[in-house]
Length: 96
Image (cartoon, rainbow, N blue to C red; front, side, top):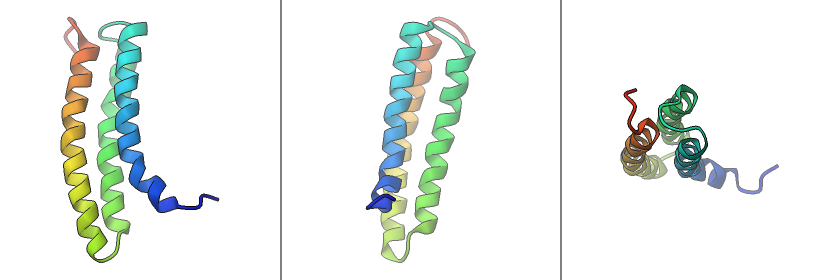
């Protein structure tokens, strides 16, 4: 179906990180501060990114496994920072 399924799997975590930021910005703009729906979806997205990286490490073979582990380490660290700032944006002046 897809010509290069490996590329779609590798690109999925950064795409979800981008969607996490867009969800936070649009949720803050449309719904406002401290909405539990926006917070619940945001709370699920980082673990999804983490488990997608674990999946990429486990399906890789040989030295590609080390490459995927390094990619996951760097992206999960940066994604955690983005996730924290998204929570700060969504919570606004409310206390979660």
